[in-house]
Amino acid sequence: MILSLAWRNIWRNKRRTFITLAAIAFAVFMSAFMRSFQAGVWDSAVDGAVKTYFGYAQIHKNGYWDDQSIENAIPYKAIVDNIPSQINEIYDLVPRIESFALASEGELTSGVLVLGISPEKENRLTNVKDKLIEGEYLSFDDNSVLVASGLAEKLGLHLHDTLVLISQGYHGVNAAGKYPISGIFEFALPDLNKRLLLMPILCAQTFYGAEGLATTIAVNMEDKKELPEAMSQLKTLILPNKEYEFMSWKELMPELIEARQLDEAGGYITLGILYLLIAFALFGTILMMTKERSYEFGVLTAIGMGRWKLFLTVWIETIILGFLGSALGILISMPIIYYLKVNPITVDMMAGDATEAFEKFGMSGDLPTAFEFDIFANQAIFIFILTSLMALYALYSIMRLDPVKSMRA
Image (cartoon, rainbow, N blue to C red):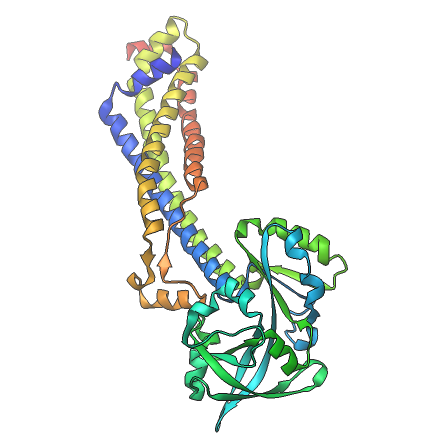
């Protein structure tokens, strides 16, 4: 009966109801769209950085991240063997040797970052094979190298040229060798594109005198949401003696996390303004309800209707308004958000400074929205809380109501 009465009361003034519903729906649409766009863009940034270079997590010797020296290499087979089969969340463990060398071709010389990779495993993580613009990809037992296009341009390198590398290897051994260039690739991160060189990990181990060793083991996963569970299991299996460090992508890319937090902080301010709009719309509706219906409230109270039951009726009216408005806003936003997830905005539509920022983190040119249940559910939950709070004014008015004065007004 109370629910039926509340429903009828809502439609006694259709114009006021429609204005209130429109205000709530607009604010819910804008907040859902903004949150989904923010989440989608930053998820794209994380996936771009992860799949470009870092991996979802990395295993090193303890202290390697602060002192990235080949002297901190680890025997990767002791770690890699059998772990993927024990931890279902992990798709692959990708060994690497990372160190520096002096590269020379003719009279031109440049410092380079040498990355020794397991070709097939690395390709599954970073899709480096698709980044080739010339030549052929590496095989496991190759004795050739791939060079980034910026480095090739800097040293005037071409396909099948021979590159001379000089460095210091593991435990101070001399590292020197000649390697033919089997391919040239385009790397997403501009800084690394000017100095990155890839070689098979067996070749890199021989070059640095570090047989059986790796400086980094990158973790590849199908779903980054499963990373906390995988980290917990990995720490139990291989890190109990503190010999190794296990770092998630959040620790590997603090700049990206800080940029996301700063952007989301600005987003929360905008969300606050939108929800303030909802609060004013609801409060205005409740204020008019209580003022216009003071005679009605006085009569109902005088004939014996309990004040709490009267408040419950008004509270249900407010909740219905909030629910209908948020449902309308969500129904409008869902197809638009889904369309922009499937057909994302491209970075070319944005200003030049934005393009440079996206390139810095190795992001793709697509900026999809995130179509996630939590984004829409959070709107409904917040609207319920907000409407419940706004309805407290009705409780205040009803509890102070003088039936005689209300019926005389």
